[in-house]
Image: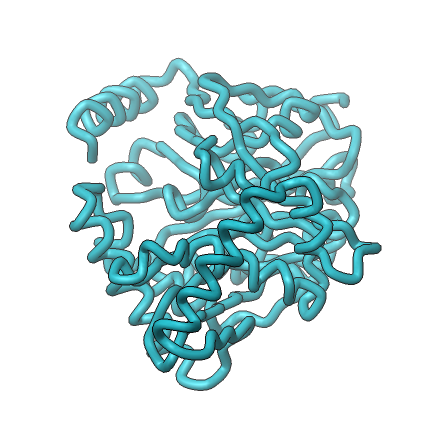
Length: 345
């Protein structure tokens, strides 16, 4: 791609032109690797609505729209040094350039177009290498690809997992016998925000119980979840699902769905009923109901764990890394980033 023909404008997500939004949505639908709702214009807008300084670099090639790079500045210092990160930061399980097929660019050129000195990222999908972008520290991501021709997608997944299936069904029967009938709601509508609040409280309690850093501790993060919970766009909508038995809460999941891909994002379970494998029960029920939202893929995000492997039938790679120029501001940003990394901030 001729660099001389590339130009860009920077805008916040709510000041994009109608034609730009339409093209962003079209690319998301047309390119399977870009279908994640984390890469949608609506996700960028939800982050901005939550009080974060989000920008979008709209890239033009010879006058035609050819790509978008959403990003954020976490702090005033970040904005001053032009040290960016993906829109949503650690709340985003996907990062990348949303661009037309065949588009090519270097990270140096992308930084210049975006008017950024430094860009620290994780969750750069391997498909982004096709645009010319690079990263380091490859990590495995797992997906569940559903059979669109199967009348019962869960049965198709479990057809060769006999021991796993038998054990899960035994636990479900035991749960129903000891607590009462199992009830599942695929897409909660009644009392939706209160149920999401309960999920957030339980998730934060889980972090504390397991000595894991509280990923939802900052105010803007629960606010982001509540914004997404209200969204009903084809490329990005909140999906809140719950399981109970005999009137007792068992498990809840909140994720975002776009273009047939469900990002399996924030599951939480009642620790009192851990012996019944509530995580399995929850995701099984979601798979069984996947046709209600035309879900063809459930993305489990970064990380290769036994529980994710139980149903995964596809893997891909995510990369982490830093793009930076040689400016003084970039050196300052690298120093700040290094200190934060060492302190675990």
